Image (cartoon, rainbow, N blue to C red; front, side):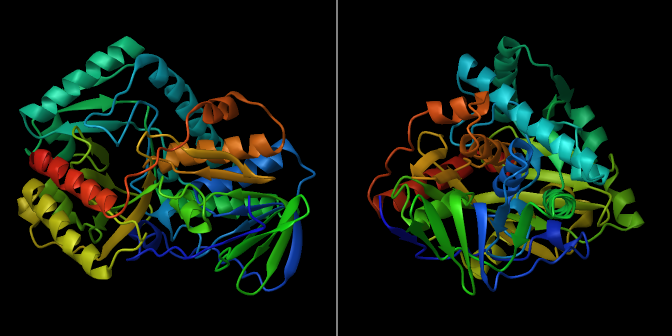
Length: 451
């Protein structure tokens, strides 16, 4: 334990996220420019941080909570993911999504608690339908290997007692408008989010209805946490927060403060969004006005067709990179955007050349053993980090659990989050970097039919 923890770098998020750009004007929050006090300070205003703040307010209405966001709300990873809030097993670290039955049953129960939280927030704050849409998702298969992945998955779902619908190639073409897919697996339990819309509305709702208890500051990165008796002083560029407890809701950025050194894998994935589709484009594509496809192979292409706020568009996500620096260049984003265009062309050749005005990278944090970096890492200093690529559900759960832990509520979520082992130590650099990127390239090659 140290007297102070200093950030050796700050988050960087290349490329503006289309999710945030298309929703129009959003509330602005002040930059902290003074020394203030609070009972709890939450670092990070993404899924984890905002869920923690709301849960704290629910658990103990007497608490004062300050949330610090390094950039702008929904401009970071929370507003850059693809918006799948998945209830079922979905291990991105393996060759398939599944684990063992007992483990997966527990995870399903927890994931559905996160979904319940999102539904409750959407109802309370009257969010638009596409912010939190319980419409399910499809695992799309592009070849025999993909169909075998789906069949393997159905065997696991049968053991879990979960429902699904097997889709034929004709079904997939009717839904998507493209003959690209040879089959699919529809799972009704996934909630689809417009991530930036959900995060901005959650932040606005909380800071409006709980204004006397929850405060939010943008452009206010935490630079240092200094011990102050049993509490902490969090230094920011122009101010400070003196608080009894700190919750770090910063995912892989926890390592920047010196926690979980060489135990967290910093991975980027990349996405592009089309311009708004006009009527001619929609007629050319055909299919349904909205659908959501994850690849049957985890390294394939995730693709969504959306409508509502921001118009009718298609979002393409694929390609991965391991970057221990937690930074990637704009050039990398542009290079992978070409891959997105090729993926789009393979599915919709009739719209080849369509403009993709938004391309971006999103930071993920994985551990080798697919466990979170959760718990009390120092006196009254809680880590709610490492969501293993499932930030919508796992981030929400980590936020809820961290608030329960701070307020002394020994809930099932806390017990489950604390029951696992710590993230395993990574091989030394550069072996870890070379090895991880080699594995990514090999697995992308195996999934090439689904890219």
